[in-house]
Length: 83
Image (cartoon, rainbow, N blue to C red):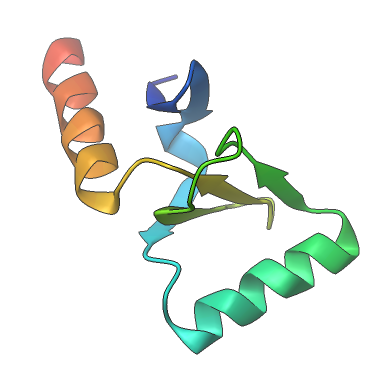
């Protein structure tokens, strides 16, 4: 299992991630609202501005204050360490 740091000591499993997207688009905002109403939203921003939205296989939605590019770089680094 590969874990990715999404900021402030929070980690997610890269094996379970489907997508990492920017929170600006209307469809993403809709996904976040639906997850919030169904109890599937995890806010890992620690009170900061949301810069990325992570969608998991289990339909959980995670909000992060770390940018999509940074999460991508961290995921690639964790893959390189395991090889």
